[in-house]
Amino acid sequence: MADVILAGVGGQGCILSARIAAETALNMGYDVKTSEVHGMAQRGGSVVCMVRWSEEVRSPLIPCGAADFILAFELLEGLRYLEYVSREGAAIVNNYQLDPLPVLRGDEIYPEDALEDIHSIIPRMMVVQAREMAIEAGNVRAAGSVLLGVFSSFLDFPVDAWEESILRLVPGKAREVNRKAFTLGRQAGRASS
Image (cartoon, rainbow, N blue to C red; front, side):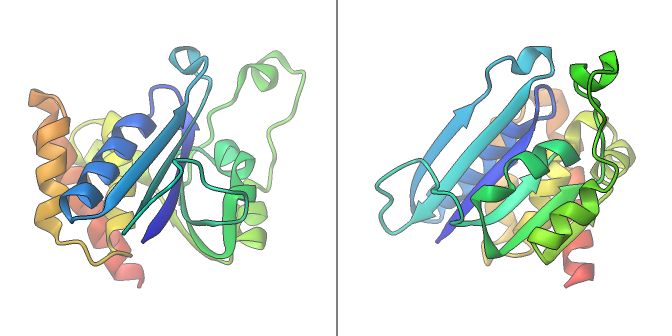
């Protein structure tokens, strides 16, 4: 059983990563429900996906304070959705800052201590250089697969189940890069536990 929040901005792969996690859990025999909110995502807006799996899931929405995990694709978006995570939950955080429009215009200031703020609320936190690892795998756009790889190290699903979902859902030429990014993330997750 798991309740997972994936939070980022448009173009980072949150929705694809949520679909990969959902399909993997479904293939493991769980009842799975998902929800996504992506408003102005194509213009760099906020994206949040919820993925829930258990023997029986009645609602796709995770109540505040109930999520077991948050995968934060971007620091500010991770901060924005922390209220959904249980204090016993875990945060997997991409150490990446993408300034939103109000910050770019000078109307707002990006929180300087975003990582510390996340850690003060969710003590079980793993910080990942997902962009750099995705570049190492062959494409910066595979950062979501890096985060999924780290996330997979917390679960008992076999690696093959994850890789099957990646190969099925990721478009042709990006499959191998995403599989490699997933492997790099999984190795990082295993090394930190």
